Image (cartoon, rainbow, N blue to C red; front, side, top):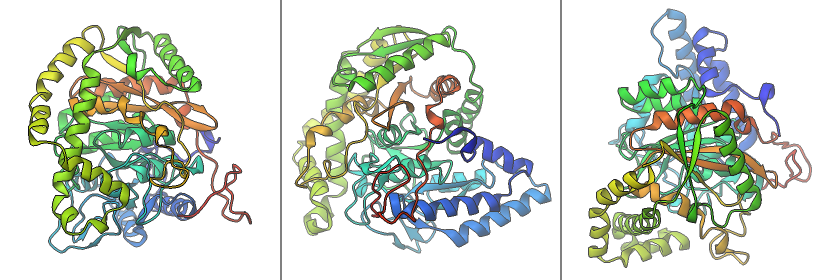
Length: 481
């Protein structure tokens, strides 16, 4: 593992260095592009790398700074986005291929917000087909692979964003989360990811998968970096709160509810130990921990699965009927399940959401300010054991993964994924959950935690593409997608 002084600067440090003139944006972007070229044959994180446009934008950013003009909070910083957002004149591939010219399209809302903050988008990132999967497999353009071990999954559907940040190709990326799609990749790749409150970040121009559940959010090395990205994407009130959360500090007076039951069952011993250490770290920072187990969580999980499947099937229904061969077998299977859900069941799930949220808040948060839960029960599994229909396919490795994330997606609550340890040389993560629109508390706790635990600073060894046997420098075989 590498990190610390050997690491490229995090997003906040890089943005501040560019603003002070210590690092030219052109140098930062050139370094990001060089890392992208080195890592791409190993992990396949990118769909497109916009080298010429990014370098032109970087030179313009340096000229703007030299002129003394006002600078945005991400001025000159290279970032990347999941391949599901409209760009002016170009449609995204959405994990089903490569994008195409679309003269009628304009930039998605988050693309506009990033530009206003001064960020430079260096490329678009790999994702699961139509965001319908939690592994990162992609039969259309090649699997995205975990930078810690190229024979392991990244998690999905925001596979490329998590992999690109874990490899430190870019210091920040934008993904989406409908049931786990930011949090699981963040956990398995060892980075920090936020699923904001549903509706907080403008989703206009983003590929829909479930209108009731889709959220757009940031992935970055640290909670402090995530806060800076969120401030660029979210409304002004949230932006101010996110900035204040970057300060870190002690947690005296904070009550953390540690969730048991389905959230603590079935954890690998190393994962359980890491979670216990995280709880200890929060107590050492002054927080009080209490055990909680709201009964509504399992019902919320089941209703989430119903709503997500039904809405995804409805969105793809016309194409599924007219050209089913355009979908891979796994995605077609998921959509077919969604088509079988009765309308009455879907409507009952939709109507019950607000009532269940009220009950959950009065129960789960009755004695605490935030919730702490396990996120993934084990490290990232092997690619070939999670490939749908493959000879070595072991569905039990994935069956219980999203049950710790889906309840909070159904309820629309903000949730922060933080690296909290390693097992078998692979990252594992935990999850903090807050009340609606209380991202600031989550980010403050995350920043304080990362001041006393350095898991977020760990980096995978860089790829050694000159090795004659195709292995990475950590000895694991790297197969180009």
